Image 1 (tube, rainbow, N blue to C red):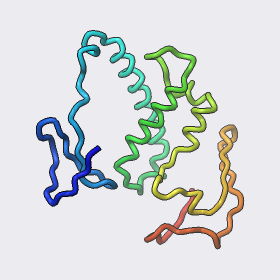
Image 2: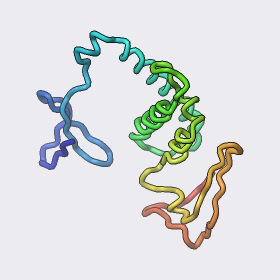
Image 3: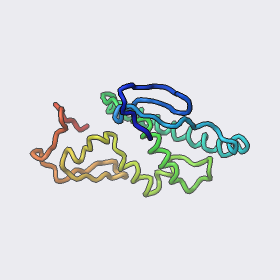
Image 4: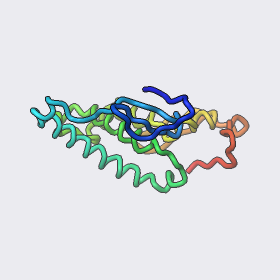
Length: 168
């Protein structure tokens, strides 16, 4: 992916290039695309299967995000939606019970790899909570409890500019 370094900042599409801005990477450019190719027009079955699975992942992501809304409301992250869709798509890919087009997140979460993907997901990728706390943690899916060990308040590494730290 190309990155703009000039003094003129562009936004939009020129020819076959898309120019856009991101919070973390600044101004970027990429080749336009993403339209249907001839095979997709001739074989809509794959497109329908992908759309069906994507719809189920999106609904799961919405329910998950709504459940976490009280904890996420103060956080402004323009990338969280995309990262969560990507997470639930990867979890859905772990579903070995259902055939293509019928796969969903639930059976994917029943696999060790699916649970590991969810457990490893970082809601704050630029501020890892366990690194900030300088402690170890283990989440028990059965009891839904997080066990934090080796915690010492003297070792907490507050992020630059932080005024408070809250764990809920």
